[in-house]
Amino acid sequence: MTNIFTYVPYTDTGYFSHLITDYVTGHADIEPFYLYAPNAHGLEQAIEQRAKYPVNRTALVTTLTKQYSQLPKYGKTEENIRLLLNENTFTICTAHQPNLLTGYLYFIYKILHAIKLAEQLSELHPGKHFVPVYYMGSEDNDIEELGTFRFRDKKFVWDGDGQSGAVGRMNTAGLKPLLNELFKLFGPPGVNCDKLQELITTAYLKHNTIAEATHYLVNELFGRYGLVVLNPDEAALKETFVPVMEDELIKQDAITIISEQIKRLEANYKIQAHPRNINLFYLTDGLRERIEKKDGKWIVLNSETEWTQTEILDELKTHPERFSPNVMLRGLYQETILPNVAFIGGGAEVAYWMQLKTIFEHYKVFYPCIYLRQSVLWINEKQSGMLNQSGLTIPDIFKPELQLFREFITKHATDKWQTQEEAAAIETIFQSLEQKATNLDPTLTAAAGAALTKMKYQLSVLEQKMLRAEKKKMQVPLSRISRIKSALFPANGLQERTENFMEYYVQYGPAWFDTLKEGIKPLASLFLVAE
Image (tube, rainbow, N blue to C red):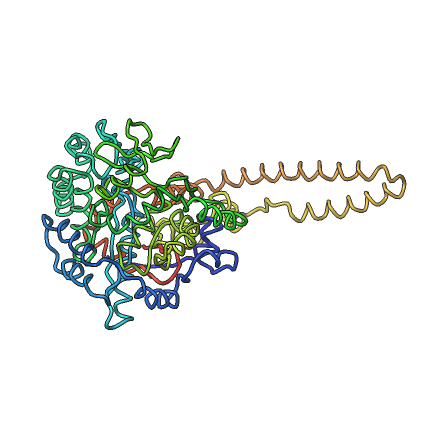
């Protein structure tokens, strides 16, 4: 593949929130809510400070070794797991739920960002090692979101076959009909199609749970880069988090600490998530429900389970794997079990991490450098040709379609359809008339203003009609612009939030990941456009 990479500031795309654009540009309003700036200097600071926050590396490596025992071996990944025993080894972490078939493209992009950043930091810091980690959010129970993906404009939905609880624990046995429908769309047999079908079949029909299937698939796609996949739904790891969970059950400090931070943050930004009185779920096979305290007892919603204080603390210490942190405490758990220096997340994740710095300080847990994951727009050869034919630049394609139409018509119209000159002339005339009317009778000022407003409106209506007339004359090139926008921004949104990696794997195979990795600039907060 011949690749062209273009980088666009996130602020110029129009697809990111005020908080995110302030964060990536280092605006003063957002500075109090994070610790390390998302740049090379911030990462150096994070690396230096991380050594002061030890983790249980033995428990981590033992867990990873167990989770990888039945998986195909990749030398680089095995080496990275071994290196995690060393105090000079750190992780670059990204997290996501085990979406069926990875869900959407940003699943792929955040993992590649972590891989590229780990590689770059290993080069910049000789004597230290950086391991990319995909932290699997296997305890999420939103099957409506996690069971949905698109391929070739068809929406596939798996409802879990009536299962409930954590999606990662759900059995995969009922997926065969859905996968058979998917494979029908793969097209004629070929190396890439055959390989992908084999990967998916082995992942989902030869592994018992969604978590195991996702682990296998992600390992097969990224193991050659040394990516380590961690499923945190393990008793040995949650044992290290018991003190925080006990505190949450008894003292319930998190809601106060995080709510105070939210009050400061919401002065300028929209809040992403709110804490609860108890920010833990109770988790067993088929069940993941919130824990609440009521009438002196701890209860599990939508169940018969309840405990006294002594009983729930005994349950926590005996079965820590049955307690699951929600979004407010998940990052705290992640940083407790990983020697992490940087977390890579999407816009929503970055936003809620801005709410959490003070809870990390309270529990003396390391707060990492937060990076906005790499966003990517992929333009294939045909689309690139259409783009060139239309005379549009890469920055142009992020503009609204109506704005592109106006700019194109203004540039190519043989007759002038805009009315700014006439509007300015009318404004001058009416100002003179208004002054005359006011001199005659001050009560006529309002009438003169109303007449001007009416005239401006009529002029605007006429301009819109003239614009429509120009559109008709330029229907072919404008239609091309519209097709480009629809193809690159499905439903007026980002491509990465709609499409699935399979579309590209079928065409390009594993080389597609190499291309993306080549284009990613992990230390630069820029939107990548890959042609």
